[in-house]
Image 1 (tube, rainbow, N blue to C red):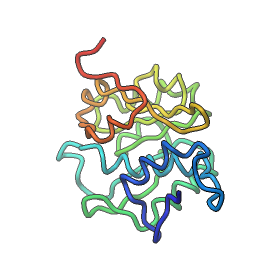
Image 2 (image 1 turned 30 degrees about the vertical axis):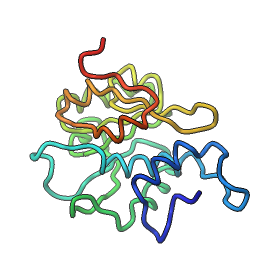
Image 3 (image 1 turned 90 degrees about the horizontal axis):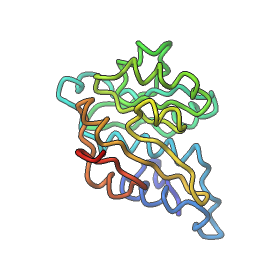
Length: 185
């Protein structure tokens, strides 16, 4: 199952394909690499999360604090893409406070020792925080990638996202591995 069609990512197909990517693809298609799947998820999160109106000016920024290899994959995924008529751009904030200008902030595993600083810097701002480590999840990331049975999946902390003024689509919640819902605790 290919994630890329004619150079465009198809939101529903990407969500389904990324979840099913753990070796279920046919022999003719090589399995998609984990960084490609995570980049596709980040792109699609832009379409399945609602930001407050105040966050709708200018380009839509997907920021990553990750290794250069992942940043290259993410940049390739986002080339020419847009959401709600706004171009999607990849950025790397120079420091935690500068991440407040992001719409999505991806905190890679290698930043786990500083995950709490990144999350704290954007707390209360409409920034969707996506991590891939237990440290990011514990710090309050809204979405955390997990690899289970050789498949990339994700958990959603709907409470934390709501506190940031973000509304996560029920379509995204349905494909999450685990959801911490409003009122649950």
